[in-house]
Image (cartoon, rainbow over the protein chains, first blue to last red):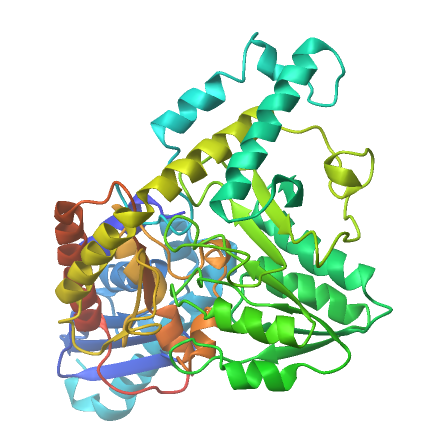
Length: 123
Length: 389
């Protein structure tokens, strides 16, 4: 039911937490999934990024892998992020892939927050 | 793996295994009980002796017991069979929203067939009001079905009082006692029960066998669900599974013998576990604080997602509600009927204890449970719900 990659990321998430900086959230407890990302940008790159998640093990693991893949990338990458690769790596069952859209939405909201409010951090 | 899912099923007692094995292989007990040859007669005699023993455990007569494949079939046969057989007397039936799926879905089927069902709602502790029940009975009512012990919360219904009401109003009373046998005394005469469903595998017996009790004075017949032979008075055709039946008989005898000590011992362990995990902030006990069977502790924790909670506890065999519905992402309908929100119902865990549970196992379970809840809460976003997009 859960892959070894899910087990590892669920048990030992190294990017869990909250940062001051740009942030984005999506979902709700009522929907069963709520995720939040926060990031700091330095020299045009995502220098620090964390997540918080209320959701199933796949959601928590996917947040961890998403952050892992985004660190060191340009903030604009958040806007283009799609869950396919993470879903594949974690072997997320088809019926649960919809939950990963909350991660996509939260990352877009995070990018939008940075783009709107953190212009002085660019370059 | 530490097993804390005894309400889902129990391991087969070693003594029961021995009895069952004696019915397999080349010994004569393997024969078809319906056969007239000597081996068949021997198997028949063994099955009838088992019937007699099981009947005695619930103060019934042997002729009042029908062997089935388990409590689910017993529930179906009792409810659908009795409703069909008595449809000319009336088409109104009464049950509660917290019954096991085997009961709930039987009533749903009858509803589709044109029967009218009154679904009783319990109070916040899971207890069905006797006043509500009596008020629900009309001249058209032919059957009331209320479970003895709820499979998710362990809440005990007052079946003696319900039996008295049903008998006074001349309505059949069916009880699903799958969770209560071996944990509470059952006396079908004292409690005025007309039909009673039992299962072997909830009481350290094998899966695939159960019993339906039909009071010989009150309900001589139900409409059979299966057809194709005259076994079990024509009410449940099919070759009898001698090894299953003798296994069930032995398991229930052992459970009955242990009735004076085992439930008391298990309830002490259950209360010990609640002492350990009850310190978690915003944890709620599901069900009545005292009117619960000895083996079940069901709790809800706020701000923790149920699937992750269960996954964090994956070294323990547990249920996030009824095992029969735990594949579903839907929150438990039983917990929702107690007023729990979807989130709290999903963030629930049923610990169910049994004969082999130890205090050391409960220490481990509580430590892991507290650590998992704490970690998942730390991981959750602090802000309140926001929309997607």
